[in-house]
Length: 171
Image 1 (tube, helix red, strand yellow):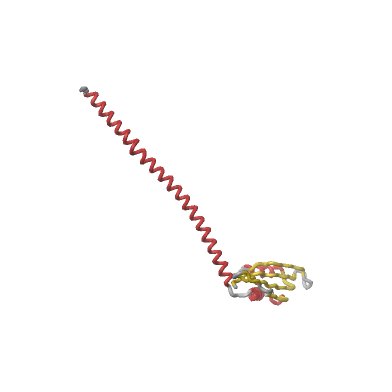
Image 2 (cartoon, rainbow, N blue to C red):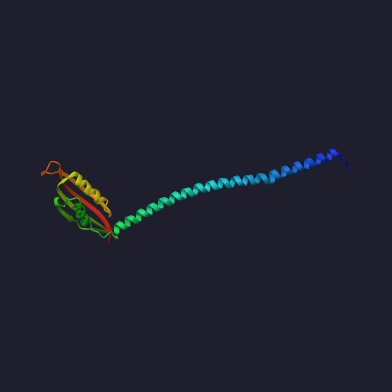
């Protein structure tokens, strides 16, 4: 058997401790640090995915709200002609109204397309634009499909207007 001197024994113990520290560092500490960094990266990736998902959900919610708003507008029982009369009355251009005509409705599936023509004579442009604005913001689905303006014979800054409004409702 080999006899080791005191100095060699200390060196062997120091070497064993050093090898133990290297073993602990490479087999325990380094994998734990790598695992922790990997979890941080996964968490960051998950946070970005959650933010993307939140944006998609926000778009979905806005779309759902618009759809429900449009469905409520379709369920509105107020007629197109009555809204034309109300808006013309509120803007005091009812006296300039020549006629209001309802066109035959077109039924497509569960929806009904309603058209109405209205003609005004001798109306100033500001009142006419306010009338169109109020019609489009009346709470029902309204679209202007035809608009014709002619300068009126009656006055200098007055116009004759023929407007066709289209609307959709449930059947």
